[in-house]
Length: 444
Ligand code: HGY
Ligand code: MN
Ligand code: MN
Image (tube, rainbow, N blue to C red; front, side, top):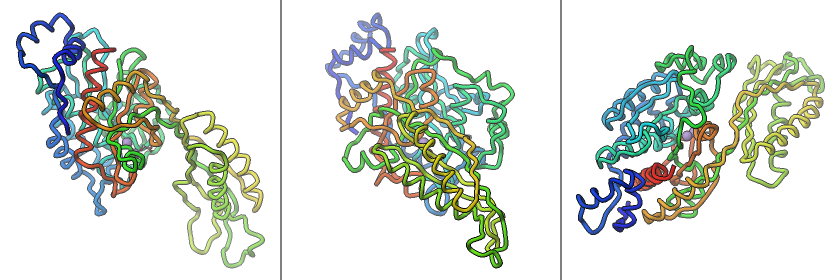
């Protein structure tokens, strides 16, 4: 919102970082005005782009259902590529299906800085998760172009594919996907391999997209908080200190399917009853120790799934999150031990198959300080907080320093159509991203 006026000396310092000190005298001569300002993003354009994006996969509840590898996802990506071209970036799709918009830096020998996020959504999701950071990153690149600023590092805007299904795009860019991972069936019904092809990637040559340690100078992501801390505390910017680890398991409970009318209550090996006891137990175990850890049973299916048959099998998901990976493992060990007892109550058995392992990622201390300094310079209130949601930044943290900027989510609602962030907060976040990017470019 506010356009911070830089003193000549302050701006001189920033410019020295951006252009190299040798250019300073010439610039200073060409711009004799007594006060200087770093550019600010075009907030109206940024929020208009978000509006445009909302049309893809719009659902009757007012949000979007833009699950990765569906037509809505693919169609939205056409718009994204157009916006990247409008921002004068060189657009490509990498082998993993991520969209990349690139802008040359003044020093081509430097590794690139990446800014970005995702545009896929959960089923019946909202209009802001991932989308704010995606449109924000494009806006930042466009603003730089319009201001005639060339960063020292090449700049890439990356829109990662299938974040919601398990950070697949960023995972492919930072790790080797196994055959089993490529064969995982995503929420769209397509396997990850089919999804990558659907988006224009090449799953047979994922090595082409892989980024080695040191090949990226830094990764910055703007995102909505998805929790209620900033909104409750009336703070404009969140400096993210770390992103939680997320582990997910498919849990199969096996009992015995039998007639629901003729099998006495004491003789049932009811997998659904065990599932209910398991769900209650998970909640109890997670809450039994102090801390911010969370555990969820989020999906459940009973087999054969008829009103008059006792379920002989239930498949459900277990998810545990925390900033401390060891704590997640300890929680799971307790849940597994307790489930043996729960299963024994009615002669049912458990099997656990882990399918997600997003390790916790602290953000880079220097970038945290730059995000805070940028907020301060822009006159924005800010606090430091952890991210309870997963983000592509945690994959990038495996190969480079990362930083994240949060803007408030109204009442902390997210992954739901009622998700909302105010246009001025979104603009503030994009300005902090822009200013942080220039600081990182100058210092790294
Ligand atoms: O599930 C998550 O935390 C993220 O929003 N994908
Ligand atoms: Mn997200
Ligand atoms: Mn999400």
